[in-house]
Amino acid sequence: MASLEFSNLIKRYGTGKTANQVIHGVSASITDGEFIVIVGPSGCGKSTLLRMVAGLEEVSSGEIRIGDRLVNGLEPSERDIAMVFQNYALYPHMTVFDNMAYGLKIAKIAPAEIRARVNKAAAILELAPYLERKPRALSGGQRQRVAMGRAIVRQPQVFLFDEPLSNLDAKLRAQTRLEIQKLHRELGITSLFVTHDQVEAMTLAQRMIVMNGGVMEQFGTPEEVYTRPATTFVASFIGSPPMNLLKNAPDAKAGVITGVRPEHLDITASGWGLKVEAVEMLGAERLIYGRWAHSQSDETVIVRTEESYAPPAVGVTLFVTPRADRIHHFDAATGRRLENL
Amino acid sequence: MVERRPWLDALSHLVLILGVLVVAFPVYIAFVASTHIAQEVVQVPMPLLPGAHLWDNYAMAWQGERQGSGSHASVGRMMVVSLVCALSIAIGKIAISVLSAFAIVYFRFPLRMAFFWAIFVTLMLPVEVRIGPTYQVVADLGLLNSYAGLTIPLIASATATFLFRQFFLSVPDELAEAARVDGAGAMRFFIDILLPLSKTTMAALFVIQFIYGWNQYLWPLLITTKENMYPVVIGIRQMISGGDAQTEWNIVLATAMLAMLPPALVVMLMQKWFVKGLVDTEK
Image (cartoon, rainbow over all chains, first blue to last red):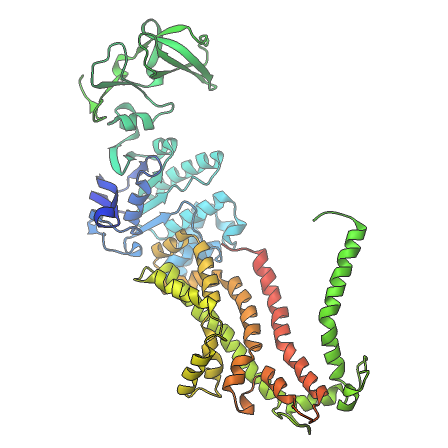
């Protein structure tokens, strides 16, 4: 087990004028045993970052430290990491046992020890009855567990997960999420988990890194990211439906974006006037889409109400009031959060 | 097709049976001829039912003890030469091409694509086109009448390299990365993971290349001058004497029947592998 430290990591493909920089100086320090989720839209560099930690991508500049060791130049196998791939990457011609044991065999660990470790991992993951099967005879969820087993038996310093749940159906995904949490509690190994799914990120992370366009937008607990988003990107990326980012609110100042989450807008007798455009029923709640009554802008405001609230007719004017302690302000030019405004 | 029309079934069977007859009849004639004595074979009309000399003819052909003109090399010896050649060519081709495909797909070295295209372009040049210069090279190296001379020039294979390249490209990158994380070096990955996955491709290639090697005619004809280095295909040709001399067709055709056996066996035995490979697609 070890801490993990990035300092000013940069990844660039190609050289000279054609160089394409995809990660622009990411720095973060992760303490021993933490579960970190890296989340962002596709193409934001999150997988590249993970692969740089794994040693599958070269680091263009900056440093990666696992524990006290600088690992920039080390082969993946020398970094004391284990990785779970998106498509599991199980060796199709080997049995489940051999799949898990392969790395240990190469590391020349005694056969008895290998058997003990694999059996232990299989017991934790409930794979014991399948050890002699080939991957193709397993279901998606079982393959996923084999991939995790292969990571566990290596007893690494750091676990790396590259969107390991994206190939599972919704039910299995929720279940596996809980299993991963349980596993992390039991083993306490520092973990880095890449996903594009904000629900996964919010539920699994002790702290999360929100990335966009190769830049780390925010690094904090799910709580912080939700309640105090550092940028407009984070505000709109985390939370569903996304936060309303409003330029034309009745009391708006020039150059400031007002952010209010749909769930923090209360329908009141007076306040911000909205013309109702559409109403959606989601089950436990309703979403009301409206436009400003006072201006011609095409800004849409989303309001989230209880299902018990009788839906307003399209076209009527509704008044909403944001909760005072839940209003966010962002600089319109930089998108950064403004405090004490 | 799940159409059920009796007349269609009958028609397709008829076409298939006709096809089989067209292909099988000459083989049958050869077999019949190989069971008679020479005089009976050259009679008109030739007998259409097997005769009583099957064992004599085959034994004579196998040992090369006969009276007529033409080559007297024993078929046993020629079969050994053919077998060694066909096996070396098939195995050599697979070994060379699987390694070069591995290099081209998994390593980034300067001029990688240039090498690939160079190999690819040779696809367009069959042995016959480069036969003159190749003969010169082999002769200068003193490889005439040797197994090395018979096989090495035929081993390089663009087709097989290309096939393996396509197969390797279809193997997910994540597999190579997983192996790297597991600590497997390049050769370890090649031996432990890539080769087992290519088993079915190799089996298919082996069948094709074994038959290719066995049926080589022009090249062995050029570079073998001694009877003890004749592959069986050449041997058959050399038994047929020209001019007025009598050819012992019964012995020639017995030899031909024997020469047909190993490729047929390879196809029949490897077919099992083929089907097995097709049933459990591993990837």
